[in-house]
Amino acid sequence: PAEAVPQAPEDPLFGLMRAYKADESPNKVDLGIGAYRDNNGKPWVLPVVKKADDVIRSDPDLNHEYLPIAGLASFTSKAAELSLGASSAALAEKRVASVQTISGTGAVHLGALFLAKFYKVDGANRTVYVSNPTWANHNQIFTNVGLPIATYPYFDKQTKGLDIQGMLKALADAPERSIVLLHACAHNPTGVDPSPEQWRDIAEVMKAKKHFPFFDTAYQGFASGDLDRDAGAIRYFVEQGFELVIAQSFSKNLGLYGERAGAFHYVAAPASDATATTTRVASQLAILQRSEISNPPIYGAKVASTVLNDPALFAEWQENLRTMSGRIIAMREALRSKLEEYGTPGTWNHITDQIGMFSFTGLSEAQVAKLRSDFHVYMTKNGRISMAGLNTSNIEYFAKAVDSVVRG
Ligand code: LMR
Image (cartoon, rainbow, N blue to C red):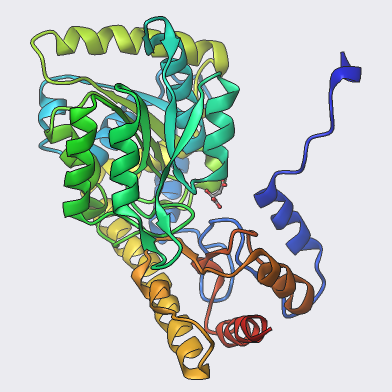
């Protein structure tokens, strides 16, 4: 069969990571993959995660047994609460089915697989509408399971903000009962989120068209530093009575990247038979999970569970989140003010208007290529930078490099 296998291109983000590692320049700057770095440019093990590690490792009964198919219940129940809110009516009414997944990617995949199998109208799969642009992996996760993809306008190149009119029009024009992928907060790659009022408008159009919301939440607590605020959109949609799904990652907000801790949640619409519906959905999710990964990995889920279930550790986590989001916000301010100080052509307010891990700089593909060849700066060719790669030692170097390539 290998003769029929064409060469595929390298994954752009992991390719960037490899190229950065191979670069021997002492000035190199890594603004590629979305992983938090401290002010020394080093990975940061959250202090609360170190404490959770100690708790887990000091348990004399620690073992390496299988988890149940749906994962660690003490983790998934708290993960659902974190997303939906402890006082969520959906939780009280037992209309939420949660499954532990291989982080956010695994959750998006499980959701995609589930919808490909069960969400059909007149026998046909529904199209998934994703924002233009979106996280590159979304496209291949959905197409790999046979779900067609279409895009809705999102980023306005002029304002470097949200094209809300374009988005609302596309959602209104999409066929009824389409699947709409929404980034719950800290949109990747643009760093542009709808305001609470704009979320209301989006929900209204989606309700009128009976669209199916598919939330991807990988940055809760990272956008504003406030876990509840960053879950606002999801909670609003649930309050509005949508049937929806949520793909949730703990990679960024707990710094558990390689542990692959995440969850998939199905929320049924309020109805007298909603609990029975949820039970049926959970039974099918279990079959899909079993055939794909059998049962999920234990360690990251234990770390997250330890933090989520202990009020003192939970409070410390919130502190750690504020440390990360605060440093990123400080870097946004520093970058904008340097570019404005140099009089770099263009406007730079979008650097501080955008939130979360990324900024969509507006730099062209040619400028990005020049930053790499002349300055050893690594970023994706769409002009996205991971703000966490900037620190007080390299920000001036980066700002001067940007100034140079913008002036040509
Ligand atoms: C990113 O967009 O950089 C992150 O979400 C990492 C990834 O898996 O692509």
